[in-house]
Image 1 (cartoon, one colour):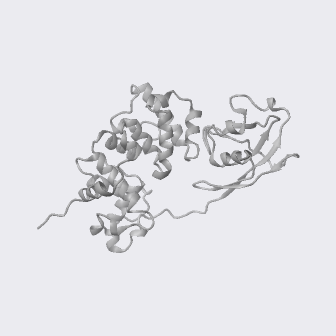
Image 2 (cartoon, rainbow, N blue to C red):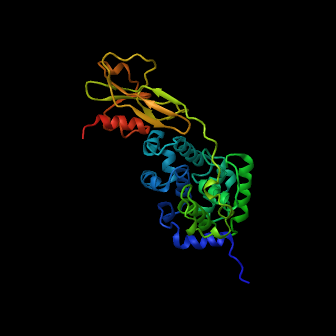
Image 3 (tube, rainbow, N blue to C red):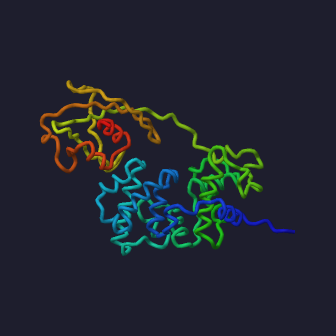
Length: 338
């Protein structure tokens, strides 16, 4: 009787023909580039990440380049990718590596997990992808594959459910081919075992998928019970001086848009007498919706408002080279005539 290939072998065989082999972080697979890609890919699709990754490594080809850079430049290159704490953590971790690890990423998962922004799955992915050593991973795509194949009910954010998923990941990760297997199972989740409209007919492990057998593929993994997202409102002011420059101010390091440059907020409901209302923007965060109502005012004494460090006057084009939240970038772009 022919022995059925293991889960890992079937996934690997599928990947050899159908998986992704030419992503930019695969072509020159250094620990630094793998780490950067893993952080960028957190909650962000590959198609979005690729151009950001290419611009980032063009400016910071090595970890030492990233560590030596000013945070402003790092945030500017990250602008638009979202979840900005990832960029701050990358920069901070690069400086820790420079101070404690001779300018290199550590080669053991325990030391990697001590760096800002690196959890267990990310640390293991770096070990597997960069060093080809066995290390089970559990990113969002892998959680989906395992939750369906093993029919694990419940929201993966719950500790009990997460323990079951880690046990499955540990059991299924093969002793060798670490680099290929981790990429293969991530690709399977992204390309076949999709959140919606999964292509079960193309799946190499559909034959013994428990969710498919029970007809619950699209119900797993279970989602967190939705909570109504509150709406908040803010007014941003475009202050313009006689030279056409606008005032930017740096956001506090913690909180929304932490460390980015933004337009000043109006603290109360009073409208400046000379203000011109600009088009409002609805911006969605993970936990709430922000209605942004920008206004434009002319300023006659700009020197009284800028301090050079936390507030500065820039032309709109200069402002667009800073690290800006997406809606602020949208407002400033609307000021520039085609």
